[in-house]
Image (tube, rainbow over all chains, first blue to last red; front, side, top):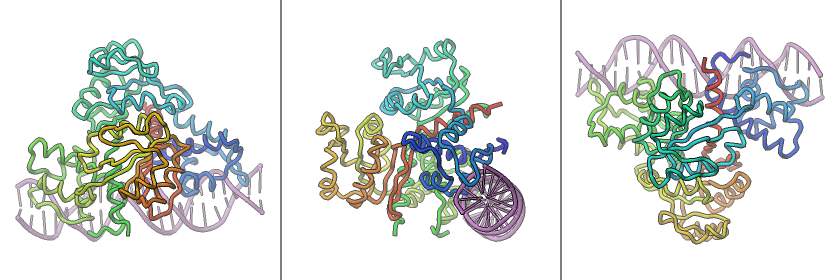
Length: 209
Length: 209
DNA sequence: TACTGTGAAATATTTCACAGCA
DNA sequence: TGCTGTGAAATATTTCACAGTA
């Protein structure tokens, strides 16, 4: 019922439920049962109900869940019922992909500035986002304080960027560089290392009968 | 000791250990203790030792682990001691980032062909990879059978591509499209939905004191 | 001595199964 | 009746703590 210690995996699943509910909503679906939503998400229905029960009661016994109401509840739980301005460090191929990824602003995650060290990139505007020199980072963050910083630099630059972010008051970092960041524990860091997923796939492929 | 049912999270951590060991190796480090490697990976040392113990004994009591030997062992366990040819569907911004991501071929994951529906992209060569029309997919996979298919298309095309992949004998799919794929259980599917990570970050940011 | 390897204990997560209710 | 919500049971994972050994 309370939010005392919510497992990361539960938070992740809530985000997944929200994604699937968005699709149901787009299809004009009004009602959904835990069984149906769970199946669409690839999880057990008791688990879905348990995940929700950490935060309250959102369904109607004998009936199910209202699709728009449940989506609204989950968004409020996740904090995606508001806008989250963000900055990006590293305008390489992945950085470009992030700047151009429409689903992020649709969900409230909006880049307000990007940074790079490459002279050829500095001054460009990508999808309405200006690319600054990394040296302007303290100044830009002072002018436009944001809570979320995204790192899409090469591994060797990532820690330095993280330190800069943290020094300028960034509270949450999403790190796509393949390196573990050191950080104080009042800063939230999520790591996303794409190459690890390929390794995992290789492992399970090898032991397919 | 045996590989009966290895938790996905253990496999993921093994990949992480390999990544950190690679860095240690590059620094010329010969020996590492479970404590030191675990700290660099952000995990408990007993957990690291337990993870390894599913597969054998790789250390020396009182001494630690040989960095190059442990790395070799983990690579063999993961299946990253060989090359994995792959195909890509979807040459948008994310697809481009994947085609240009040097760490993948360094670890043996090599795209041999890419596919798209956009006439403007078909026929281009990106980082030595030719972009075919999606209609040529059956033919190309017949000529060059591969086990891994990567999906970086918009959500609405992903299931159709997955079905094509599976029909052509692909055994493992890494799906970056924000949709849950239906698939027979002799096909391994890993989902990577980047937007879910942003949601998770928002959740933990909101409850930072 | 200084570590690994690993049963056993502790903890966390998932699933069951059914009471409760529209 | 047909669902949700949730204690309790089952299962999975992590951590402890120490025997084993180079």
